[in-house]
Structure formats: structure tokens, C-alpha cells
Length: 347
Image (cartoon, rainbow, N blue to C red):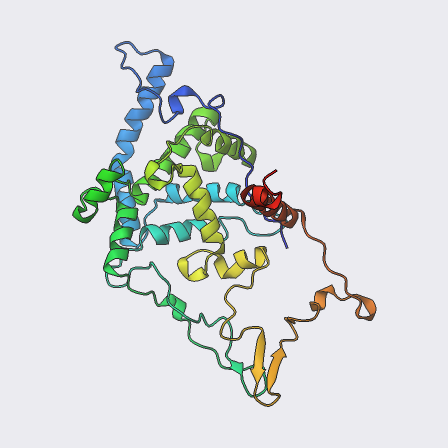
């Protein structure tokens, strides 16, 4: 099983990011006589303007097929996801786990007016069979995958998600909240459009090519620059920046149930040793014949796992991986920070 590695981003500093690429940089001045650098910058603006009609066509085509991202935007997001959760030792990274598909599914959740794809149904996904209550073993019958039949949101839930995806400006029901919180919330669709464009802007300005054309080393360097101040914190989203949103959505898309668009074929669960949803089978099955619970041989609850038994039935627990030890250390550190004073008597 591959090791789960999340990026180690440096503490934010403005030193590694050119001033003109920072979110709070002043607008460039307009000069009558352009030097070479200014001419190239102006040429880039002109070419972008000329490309705008083609970009609008591509976005219209994406919308027609039920999507949201252009090919370039999707490729940039996939490259970002692969640096946040890199492929390692044959294990899939964020791209292969379907992070871009997950994000696009979220951003277009309300495009289907009759069945918004917000909340997957349940209770069973069909990935596990019903138990045979007579013998206490798995049966051959499986429930239908009710996860794929999404639950219609309530009026308030749809209102929340409409503001989340499209922004709260112009929604009368949210005007009072916007006034209390300092202004309307920008929708995630606009956040992603602008954020992915900024990623390529920083990559091109500092490395000479769009993000997807760079080596992984240069992509990591650009990722560090992006974390150094390219994106403004959003007070309406807990001061999260665009990069922090992408990291959060990469984790969600890698490990949420596959019905939400990511976690391709459950590979994300396998990556971290999760079995996903195990109902209605469960692990211990009640047998009416034995009048007691029967443990599954492949998943014992009170005895050692089969892969941890050595010769002669001697228990040989598997050692923690480096990543598992890191998670354990993080949990201990957080717990100590929360309960430290109570544990040491306030000394």
C-alpha cells in the first residue's frame, strides 16, 4: 500500500512571490512608451482578449455536456491535486482518484433542477451483501445502490448551496446575513475560475510555462509561491485561501463515497486502509441457529487479523508506517494542546 503524503507547505512569507503577483499588489500603471517587458505584458493582455471568444465557446461546450471546467482548467486542477496528494509507489494520486471530477460535480450540483446532486441517499450502497441471519454468514443477496439516488434538498439547504456555489449577492433571503458579515460571499464557481487562472499566471510569470507544462519540481516550487501570498484570505470562508480550499476538496474528493464523483473505484479508501461503508453486512453477524454472533473469518473482531499471525499462530502485529506514526504524533500534539493544563493540574 502506498504511503499517504500531504504537501509540506512553508510558512507564509512574501519573499518568494513577485510583488506584481500578490493578491494585494497595486494595479500596474499605464505607460505611454512601453519598454520591452511592458510591451510583452501588454501583448499578453491583447492575446488573452483575442482568445476570450474561444474561451467562451469552450465553457459553453462544457456546460452543454453537463460539466463546468474547460480542458485547461481541468488539467490545471488535476495537476494541483497530484501535487497535494502525489502518486507514490504505484498508488494513485489526486488526479487518478478523481478529485477534478468530484469538484466539478459539486460545482454543478444545482444544474440539475429536479435532482440536485448534493446529498447521496442511503442507507446501503450495494457494495456489501445482506447477512444470512440463519447461518451468521454473508448471503448472496445485495441491496440496490441507493447512494446514487440523491436526496432532494430542503428549501433552506438549497438556499445555502445556491449562495455557496453562485454567491450570495442578489439573494434577498441572505441580504441580512451578508450585511452582518461584511458583504456578499463569492460563489465557489467564480472562486475556482479565478483561482485556476491565477495558478497559471504565477506559473507562467515565474517558470515560463503554464502549470501543467512544468516538471513536478517546478510545480512544487510554484505551489510554495502560491501559498506565499498569491491568494487573498476569504473572511466569509473562515479566512481560507483558494489553495486551502483546493487542499480541502482534494481530501474530500479522494476519500468521500465514490457516488460524489471522486474516490475512483474506492481506491482512496484502500490507500489509507479504510473499508468504506460495510453495511448491511457488518462484521459480526447474529446467527439464529447458533443463538449468537458469528465473526467473519476475513475480519475477526476479537482475534488477531489473519495477516498478523506468524508461524504457529503467534501474533505479530504489523508496525506502524511512517505516515501512521505522523498522524499519531499529530493527534497527540493536538490532544496535549487542548487538555494539557487539565492533565498537569494547571502547573
